[in-house]
Length: 70
Picture (cartoon, rainbow, N blue to C red):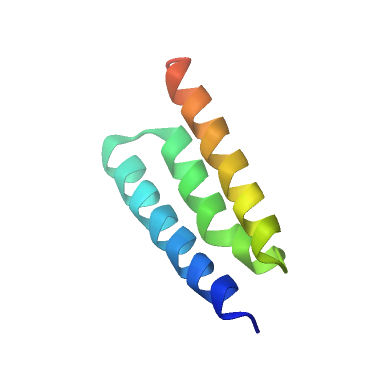
């Protein structure tokens, strides 16, 4: 087990939890969905670059959804 993978999985899980709680309190579906994805996807990535790539992709989709007014 790679220690960097473990570190980034904890960081992304924390970001996901914060997004989920914020989205739930504000009733914002993009943040709820992104928060759940941030908490779940580290279980399915095996390398650090894959984890970072998927995290950037989820963040970009969330930014675009909020920018579009969702």
